[in-house]
Image (tube, rainbow, N blue to C red):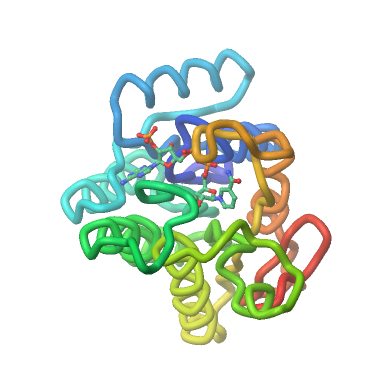
Length: 242
Ligand code: NAP
């Protein structure tokens, strides 16, 4: 097993995930670029390598048991362990805001399948590899729009009532708290990152910060020291209310 720390970022072919991969690479991690499309994955790996990152491609569709099992086998065979997992892949659904009175069961299922079940699927597949690392870190990509505290605070504008995307992040937050509780007697830290309103394909580049800025909190949580928190939700400014 090599001494180089190994990270896997899901949905790393573009947007915030790509910048998390670039940032972890700059911190000296070898970075697995988890991406479902072969061409987009290869392009991202080539771009990262050209920028000096020790990147490798990991075919990964977070909605597929077979794909996730194969991804874990690839990381196991190639690296033997995993130090950092960033569950970044996510989808919005069909529209934003996705008013609850208009959301279809099909869209709701698709969003939850990717944003929640995908995270659980990938995390549980990677846990055996994470347990072999000296200081494992898991970061789940959440959003301010999933905060019930913010959503029920008068005057806070989270972009309209959301029936699928925002609730999927609230669900993810609850799942992350459960993982943190179960793993509390291990050295694994698992936290939620809220990147802010970031200009990516996700919002047709309407976001107000860059993907590099949006990646910062996930990178910070992925590289937490041993006395850092677990089971929390954070943005660039600090703790985000549940
Ligand atoms: P993005 O540019 O649309 O990137 C999303 C990434 O997820 C892409 O690489 C996409 O791959 C991947 N992905 C989607 N479904 C997947 C699947 N089934 N398997 C594997 N990969 C999949 O969006 P982004 O803005 O960077 O968003 C990244 C994360 O940040 C998401 O979890 C999002 O909810 C969260 N977030 C974003 C914002 C924002 O303002 N942008 C704010 C809060 C939270 P393809 O290229 O193959 O589609």
